[in-house]
Length: 193
Image (tube, rainbow, N blue to C red; front, side):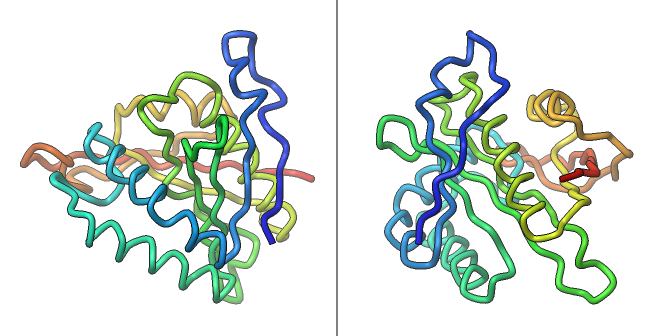
């Protein structure tokens, strides 16, 4: 079942496009249907220089293998996968990785919040982050964490939606386009029902 979630309730007039954005939670069947769109989103992000665990050039088989692994985790109910649709086109995605250890059932990692380069600056990232929070709360998850490249433009979004920077690790990941190691920035947010 595909579940429709509310869009961005706190977007400014500048972000009015997000009012027609639909945020959808994908089940296994719908994720398979969206596989090509998800591959395109990941490829666009890597090509645009996003630090999301891949380097350029991202080959389609590598992207397909990644998404097939995500779908396998959907089957195990250890991950939540959302997409953002604008005018019927998939333009964004975001995930929650649900911690399974007995002492950590209250937390989840926010992962791969991606908005296609042609749809950025419209409130879609914010809408995805807010929908991920609602999904986390519905599963009893009250502590969210994430990391990104230190200095990345995504940090502004995370701060704007209430995440707190707690530090970073030098030389954490290779830049997607250059042979350089970069620090990450680690964020968390405590959410309440």
